[in-house]
Length: 186
Image (cartoon, rainbow, N blue to C red; front, side, top):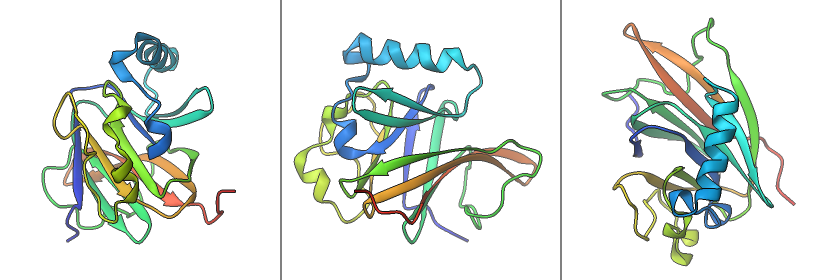
């Protein structure tokens, strides 16, 4: 039985998964141009679970599992976020359901920290000291909703984001795996 290393919660809507430095440029609902642009992007592809939102020089993976809590698991430099699980998942990295579409995209991590941020939050919650962390932790700055962001230490490089579903005990759980793509960022 694997135990989660952390969790992240939302009241609905997307999470941003990106380099922690890139997330610092995000203003969430504090800047309607940021948040409304993301909402328009997500509305254009209704039902999209995983997408890539680009704003200026920064790009963010977007994962929209629904309202609630996602447990975060780690194996080496890989992470799995499982939404809808109410207890530990035996192996969060097992193959997903065969009849569920899988979506993938790549993100670049340069700061050695992956940020998982509920989209309405302001990226200024990520402080300078947060970029030096060696263990998963919430950002040191102010969050509008406790538990709505998590920072994960990671090696610099490209990471593949894989969104799918797990069916465990007759329950369908949304999952996002973030795994090294074995190509170093330059």
